[in-house]
Image (cartoon, rainbow, N blue to C red; front, side, top):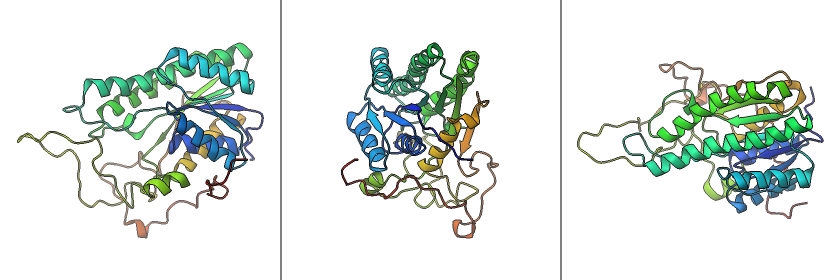
Amino acid sequence: MEISLEGKVALVTGAGPNIGSGIALALARYGATVACNDIDPAAAKACVDRIECNGGRAIAVPGDVTDEQQVIAYVQRVIDELGQIDILVNNAALLGGKGVLDESAEFFSRAVQVAAMGNFLNTKYVGRHMAERGIRGSIVAISSSNGWSGSAGVIAYAFHKGGVNNFVRAAAMDLAPYGIRVNSYTPTAPTPDNPTLIAERGAGGVLDRPRTGIGGATGDEEWRRPSRWTGERPPMAPMGSTGTPTDIGHCVAWLSSDYARLITGCDFVVDGGARAKNFAYFPGPAADLAGPSPVIPLDVTGELDREPT
């Protein structure tokens, strides 16, 4: 089975250096022309550069996904410059935050707004474009393991990812009569594989270098109890890896292809079995696990310091 997105145009929101950039690159490597959106124009441009360095075609369409007029404007720009939109990936989200005892109303409101309005506005206007033109398109939203199970220290993130899950199912029902599919994918803290990001911040990873301080600082009252275990822990994923944005990109590309023509209202989990495992189960030490098959790379050379083609 040879997946091809040739002739298709994709819009990816939140195309920053990790997951968004990986998805955008995957769609381009499978043949789509990609419009890279981010609230930070530099991040959108960096995503375009990565795609072009790997032989793909892309344009930067920066804008705030919570601002209706900005969304209308960059969606129309994509249509004007690239002809149409066949694929939408709602990836924009606000990470970080704190637990329910310490989160601010301001952060909570903004985080929920980015997810809620980002998914709603982009799906609405891209969906209307697809329906009007008879485009049997694909819309994919990013969920998270935090949207399906509880985790301390990220109350706003957990709230809006849970909302994304049912938004996908409801939007899938609204758009099914038009042949437009709406699905989601669930990653679990993927290990970065963008060469530029790694060069700036190091390789990282949730297994070989577990994150600390997730959710930010909490108060220092005497009655406080720890919300997270900070000692050594075995690998969190049964397959020994939570994957990378490349793994997610392959999944989203397939989900956006005609091979997935009857799949809608579904969630695809790309996490090495992390969500499926029982809370009491821990796999063996990483060195004792076979692990998944080698990743199929998307970056051709990993050398992103040369001029884009």
